[in-house]
Length: 168
Ligand SMILES: [Fe+2]
Ligand SMILES: [Fe+2]
Image: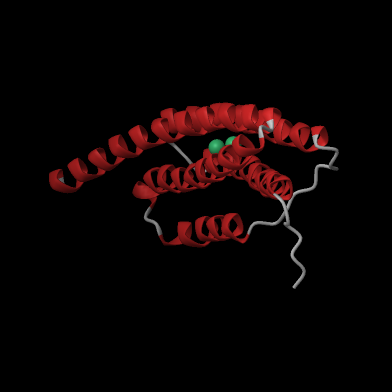
């Protein structure tokens, strides 16, 4: 197998390509999640984060262009796994737990992005690659903000479900 990543610079490009794949997939998934959701607060969080995500796609494309690259997504089996897991498992979830299921699965996607942008931040930081660094920092803030909102919603939905279970 050829070793396409020989330098830190190559690694930044690789990470950006993977992020482009992740952000585009998440841009497709968020409306699907919102559509399956009946909780108004969760829908609001998903829709607001869809706006963030559209900007993230553009920012990653621009960062690749700034490095002289054609913005090409690099397939990520991890993201595809999260996506498959989401689509496959939803059938097994009782309707009254679906919102909670979607909130927690959206949290997994955010955790992936946080890990990916933190990694980019580390490598771009060592390189002094300012554009990629700025992009990583800004997107990280959005992802962490979305994760917090999703986490709070998941906690509320889980408390409600626990309450209903004991009241039944
Ligand atoms: Fe994102
Ligand atoms: Fe995100």
